[in-house]
Length: 240
Image 1 (cartoon, rainbow, N blue to C red):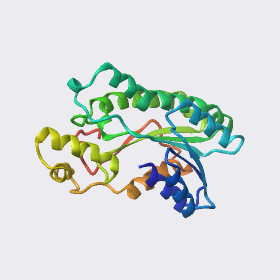
Image 2: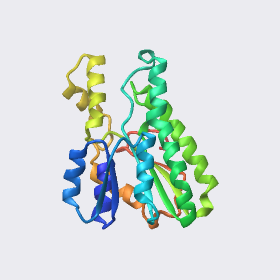
Image 3: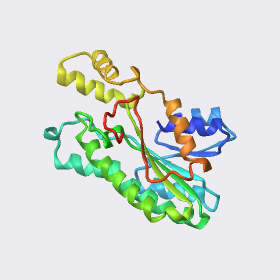
Image 4: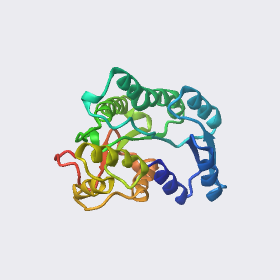
């Protein structure tokens, strides 16, 4: 998801900082756009990497942040223990609060900023065997909505993208889990998920990325505190 948004921004001519844990992938990405990319190798969910990112940005003008990282393992409630919940708090919620607090003063001083969080359609309609994600991502929605109200008059917007099933490696863990629960093959599990999507296919990350790039642009200034589904019609509620 982050890769799709990054490519959309780059194709629009933006200069970006890319943070990832795999230095080889960062190098490959940099080689595609050497004049537009600065890389930082690290785990963005860790305080040390957030501090390194702040130092890298320094006094430079920063238009916005795209906040995204992987989710917790696929489990039902009965399969979890308290350590799973502690880890989910760290990987889904805590670091997003930390990075938001770290960069908010910069946006306030600029009187401008865009922050976009990539979460999941599960914040609007729970996904089976994802109890950790279903629960903690709702907490992200709560703090983002509240903060967006507190700073709405400061030129800073905060919005959430809630993707449904896209053709990414992250979705594979759900195929595996469903195949185990239902006693079917991984390919059959994937087909079942696809059949439940109203448009009849998985999402494409480059399609997804174009919305992320727009939300990070000046054109989105009248939209804040929103959670926007990008799910092929999977969420059935009228507020989806």
